[in-house]
Image 1 (cartoon, rainbow, N blue to C red):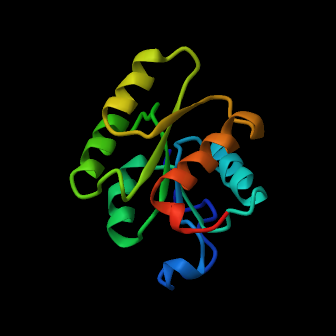
Image 2: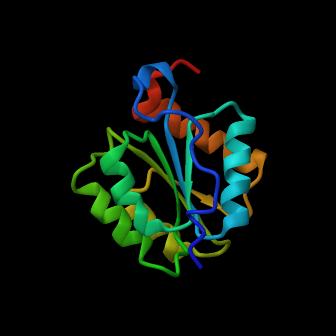
Length: 151
């Protein structure tokens, strides 16, 4: 079930000057409750420019429209191969333009390795919580293309 249309998305104009708003983050997780929890975690840490989709097939079109700095991508997608989503993004977008955190299931070593081989910057393991997710998110934003923002 695609709930992308019913989830709250970015509140505000994404077309303003990127330096005025801080890093843009895209959360692409198929499970609506988990997607909203990640959005809440980000907003709770003052990352206010977050867009959420539960359809990983929307990732490439969204990147064509907005200059996201960080993608948190669900690697356990039932809609399409998340590895192919990463590979498709790698063609027009270089690692210097985007940090990718791949969300994997516990014990899914092959999924984690495939994500890293396809261009993910790092991986996060379910279940996400403040202690294991926020340090990785901060690191990705401080060392990737969003490093132009002062944190």
